Image 1: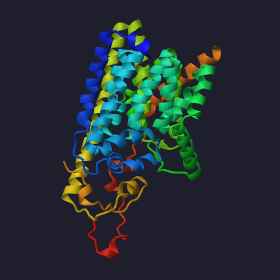
Image 2 (image 1 turned 90 degrees about the vertical axis):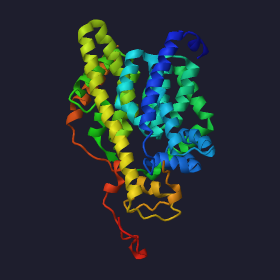
Image 3 (image 1 turned 60 degrees about the vertical axis):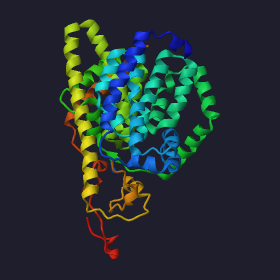
Length: 357
Length: 53
């Protein structure tokens, strides 16, 4: 890792910093809306820090949030921190795969979803980028560290980890088993997963179209994005395409497909599209430039549309709470939990817990 | 080596196909965008005489 960092040129670091700042400014804008019961996870994670550690999701997100909550951070601060972390995916992809994949990611709806909502799979974005970087650099210790992070971040990163195991060398795979086996957090994950699988938990959402439109863009240009990603899958790193197809297949089979869940798949696709673009630009410069503009337009317009959707939903929710009629009763901390589990009744929310900006 | 080629081809084809069909799949609106759009069941609160939304 140290050798890798020393090998980087300063202008590369500056470009990475600039990419992060651009992504960050977009993220801060997405998180700057009204904040009243806006997004259940952000609200819940900022009010119930300890509960989040025993959540159905892996614990890294809760572990990161907990000290901030103890310092008194509300949903707004947590949202900003989450956006800053998710934005790190762009410079990391730049470091691993070059400028074009990073640009595609910057314009993609995947980044918008991850930065707009402070959720577990938002954290999956930088972790996944770090993991792909480690796979690309083929540095064993770095790879083992990021693989442990993948195991502790989200169900989707766990699926990607599983899908990429065939690309490990034999001794790295054995060392990974040791690293995870001696990590108490990984054991906790194993027990949690066992309980989840045996209990059958969660709401099934089968919005396959919404998922794919968030990955490929909602305009007819999605076909072009797909073709370019196909070119990337044909010529680029095979672990990225295996991970992308494996993850999509798992989410479809488990009926966990919706546009907010599409961020990790979107990152994998952005890498493939970027690699395909590079290939095309090397062969056909003019055609490549035209295709690049079309792809960035197709993804960027979808990302803009999704960003507007996130902001509008927050504002509509805030207005509803302020204007009523809302039945308010003190002491119902599990309101968001009920909603997330499909409870369809009225949510009674204590006024002092509404974070009105 | 040939198996790797087939794998790459299959993956590329699947990804391109998914992109091709993406804009034309039906639109679904998951409940988490707008929890208030869900059918509201109020009878749980009725005995207390609370105002219906």
